[in-house]
Length: 499
Image 1 (cartoon, helix red, strand yellow):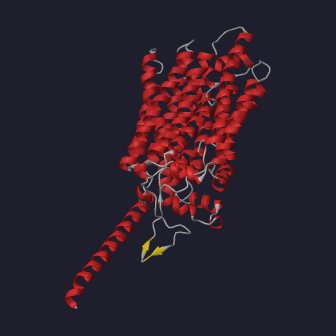
Image 2 (cartoon, helix red, strand yellow):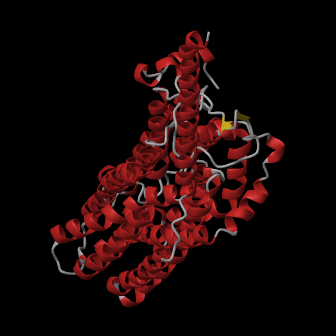
C-alpha cells in the first residue's frame, strides 16, 4: 500500500460505512483454506467495506491501458504510409500489430504468477514502465533506416500489454462489491477499447500521406512525442497514486482469500484445476475465436477499406473508430446487464450470435461502394464483437471461482492472441489471393463454430452459488440471534410469575 491506513479508512462513502457494517457480497462463500472459523455453528462473517478510491483505481488503470492499446494499431491503420516510409512490405507492417499477440503467449504465465505473488501495484508499475520505455524508443526511430529500432519500441509496448490485459477482472474483484464487479470490469476493458479507437482515429490525422520523406519523418516524430508524453505522465501517476488493495476487503470472498496462507496456494495446481474444468476450456476456445476475429479485422482494416475505397486512409481510421466506440457502448451495457441479471451464459451466447450476424452483414456490404453503409455495418459488428470482451472475463470468473481472476483472464487472453495471429496471417493471405469477401467469410466460419461451442458450455456459476450460501448463512445466523433474544425476553417476563 502506498497510503496510510488512516487515509484508506477516511476514503469511504458515508452510506457505505454505517457502523462498519458487513456486506453479503457475490462470490463470498466457497470454502478455501483458512475459511474454517465458525461460531455457534455459523460461519463468521468478516467486516467488509467499499472505498471511494476504488473508482480512482479503475479509472487510472483504464487510462494507462488506453495508452498501451492505442499503439497496437498505430502502424496498421496507416500501413501504406509506413510501408513507404520504412521501405518494407505489408506483411512486415502487419507484424507491428501481431507482435502484441505473439509476445503475450510466452509471457502470460510468468506475469500471472507474478500478479498472484506480488499483487496489483507491482504489475501496474511494470506495465507502465515498459510502456513508457517503448514510446521513447519510438521517438528516436523516426527515420527511414531505423525500422529495427521502431520494432524494438513496439516490442517493449507489446511486453507492457502482458502486464495490463488480464488485470480488469482482478482489479474489480479486489476493489469492488459484487453488485459492481461486472461494471468495474467493463470500465477496465473500456480503456483498452478507447485506446484502440484513438489508435484508429489519430494516426491518419497526425501523419498525412505526403511524398516528402523529411516532412513525413517530422509528422511521425510528432506523433511519437505525443504518445511518449502521455505514457510518461501516466507512469508518474501510477507511482504516486496506484494502491495495492483497500485496507478492508469489499467482499467476503476477498476477505477469505486474504486469510489463505501463502504456503497453501500453488500456482501450478491452480493451472491444473483450470485445465480440468471442461466448461472453462470451452470458454477459452470460444473467447479466442471471437477476439481473434476482432484482432484480424482491426489489423487488416486499412487494407480492406483501401481495396474498395482507394485514398480513404482517414475514413478507414474513422471506420475503425466507429467499431471501437460502438464496442465500448456494448461493453458497458453488457457489464451493467450482468450486474443486474446474472444471466452469464444467456448473455454471452446472445452477444456471440449477434457477432456472427454482424460479421456476415459487414462482409456482404463492404464492396457495395457506399462508405456510409460500411460505417453502419462496422459499428454493429463492433457493438457485439467488442462488447463480448468483458462478458468473457466475467463468465470465466464465475466458472472458475475461487481460482485467481488473473490466471483465468490470462488464459483467455492467451487463446485470443494465438487465434489472432493465425486469423490475421490467414485472412491477409486470403485477401491477397481471393479478395476481401473470401477473407471475411473465413472469419464467419469460425464465429459460427464459436457460437455452437458457446451453447455447449455448462453454466456452473460457482461465484453466484457461493454468494447464495453466504446469504443463507447470514439469514440463519440472524434468525438464531432473533430466536435467542426472544427466548431471553420470554424468560425475563415469566420469572416474576414463577417467583
